[in-house]
Length: 264
Ligand SMILES: C[S@@+](CC[C@H](N)C(=O)[O-])C[C@H]1O[C@@H](n2cnc3c(N)ncnc32)[C@H](O)[C@@H]1O
Image (cartoon, rainbow, N blue to C red):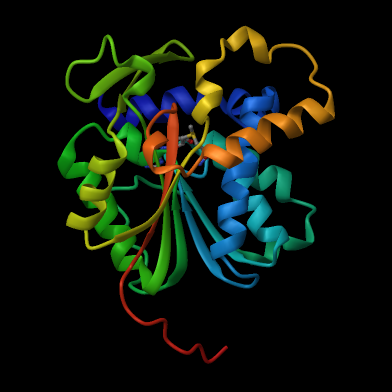
């Protein structure tokens, strides 16, 4: 099956699982917090944001609540529908400027310099072909205004170090064999640089939490314990010597250039 069909079918089948993922365990809740914190730091209220690979749109929803104007894109039509259904009665709905099934490699329909920030939190690690990764990053660069920020998630080879040969692994998701591209942070910086982005932050999303067995996150965690976990992750998530010691990491990259003064 061509990769776009595989991704669309797998995530169409897994909409609920994907929506619930970020509240499922204390480690996933921490992932959400660590990402939200970065988004809030770099994306001011009122900014225009395009979320490529939005899934059911948890981050898009957060940005809408901060009064941003948001466009969402995904290969999974069911994920996008779940997002629009959820937003149906929300007063923020008017700020969704598109909700479009499309591939991250085929975004020629989006205007140049039209977005203050772009989220690419999913597609990059499902594009196992280098040319496709570069196509998607080239669109992100074109779409962003000078000085705009790209938030891209990468998968690390760390959890599969013993078994991985090359840079691609496969995971079983909703009965589909879903490919995953993995690379270390130094390689992600090289990828960003060769696509004319400047990497300004890298943050582990599980970090030291990836040393703990999955079973330790089961059951109900008291609020105080969740806070302690988040504090530990927070203290270590950007330590140079630990970057990549995680399942996933987020890279904040900037399109060089001076932000233009906006008329509106
Ligand atoms: C793991 S989910 C992440 C969803 C959300 N961005 C988040 O961080 O929670 C990955 C999403 O990326 C989408 N995706 C993967 N490859 C894509 C591509 N080439 N173009 C558009 N969307 C893609 C999938 O359909 C899925 O909804």
